[in-house]
Length: 247
Image 1: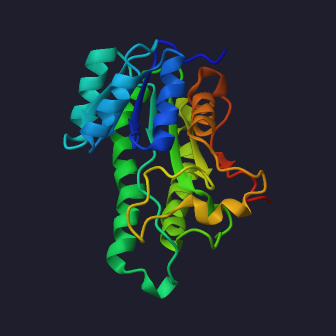
Image 2 (image 1 turned 60 degrees about the horizontal axis):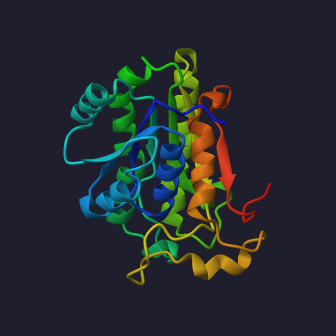
């Protein structure tokens, strides 16, 4: 059994399908999970669903500063051991010339700048942990430029991967592991509402393993990376794509 009990995870981007799978996997093993969210209604559903789990699940608004959030979390739970950033929804595929400066800058802000700011606020608390972990999430297109995903997602995700490598080297001597999950072919994080939203159904036939990835499969990987047993794994980009990206 993986060691997660009585530790605390701070999770940005937890209110979607795959985020919910990770929260469930962690809380089932006794880890406390604090969802940082702009969607209190959806987060409230998750909190209610998991109210009887061994680990406590709560939600906090992302309108407060990262420094305020981590200070409050530490005062409530006495630790902040794991930071997960799974922010930024996926877009449908468009031509490269149709990606605007504003869209690209928004993607980079959500997936690189904001998570990096969160890391800076987390570091004083991760330094106090006996098994500190940072986990980023990117799209699978970062692995090979897969044409089935929006190039803006892959560009921003490439920044996430570079941030993973750089921080893993910079923080290794402090015992803080930094890893990334490149996911593709997985259940939609949120039900597609607009033509600009990515819909996994469009690439389902391309998945070599023959099925769309589930939130529980995502949660199982997060559970391992967050555990004390994963202390010798850092600077790694996990390929969670059902075989879409091989090589």
